[in-house]
Length: 153
Image (cartoon, rainbow, N blue to C red; front, side, top):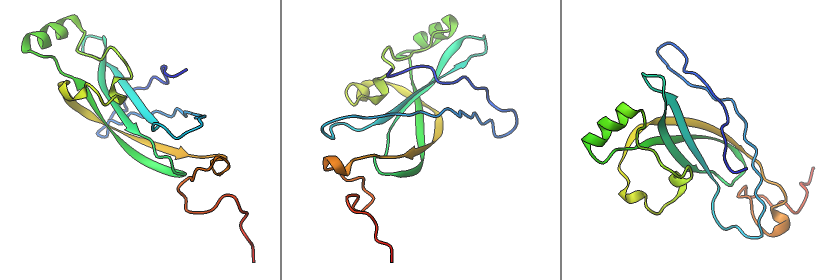
């Protein structure tokens, strides 16, 4: 599976208005070359004033390929209607502008002509692990040689 719904959550009450997802994602990449770069693509939906499920924001971020724990800030944005009339009619219908392809935020082509508005950010904590990269001639970026065992004195 390359996409799906992970978790449903509700904002906390109070001044912080935090929304917490505690959903672990496990990803395995298997390749004979290092083409491409892993990305996390997020689509956030919410309930509007009339109880309809509408897009709150999209975001994508390239994931680090080096071993470690990272705290990343993913900026969210949502498409903007082309005119004031479209904005009003989409509000009445409860169908604001949204991308037809959920992977669109990860593409580089076609985004330069898309009108968007900022809609906040998400803080993401990622733990990166690698396995057997040295076997295939790749470095994990840690600066140590993984082919030899550490010497204890």
